[in-house]
Image 1 (cartoon, rainbow, N blue to C red):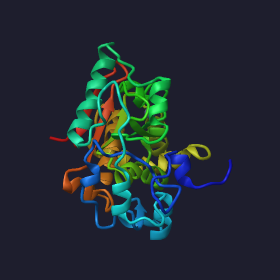
Image 2: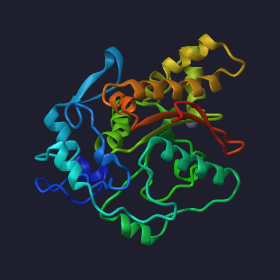
Image 3: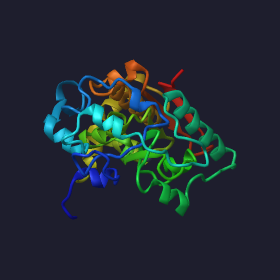
Length: 293
Ligand SMILES: [Zn+2]
């Protein structure tokens, strides 16, 4: 793996800041994000995690470097983001949480009804996005091969930031990756997506119930899912692994919604954090909490 600025790997966008060749280059001209009042700590010190274990990940300077914003003020960055939006078969990228939510749910309805558009998955779209991107959603889902967010929401190239981990477990790196879009480019929606018959959750449930750690690094997933396990035990349902899967996404969404970097955006109404559950049987995404009104 070659060494290089993290921004290039994460966003792969062109320079737009006159002071730094690594700026994010995310277009927000149709989203209204450029006009939003960003949180006081916007682009300053970045932290990950919650509660007592929460720790500072980056210094302010390092955080700016991660966002590719060294040498630019927030206002400069936002002004520089005014560029032409890429054309899309499904219209301009939604800029508000409710519109983004509706766009994703429309895509899921197409998936369920076998009426897919497969929008914006061609070389033309690739060319239009080569200079900038404007994802309207950030999705955290499980690694399960049957739950790819781009398919179950029928989205196209450049629509979503996607994070995937076993059981949707979210440590500092995943949390920071989820925060990236909302904090740097006004991504208005985060979806934390669990699913039916999750093997990672079931394995973690058994490991915790029987007190037998999973081998190697798999145990890290078990540890991350412990709060959901404990909630499932308290709820004592007929299907505790399924209860644990649902608890995991709700707990993760709650933590994101209230963390100190994202909470100001949620309070301002420019970001919604939704927990959801995907049915392998029907293809339907069921919203558990946080749907924007
Ligand atoms: Zn899973």
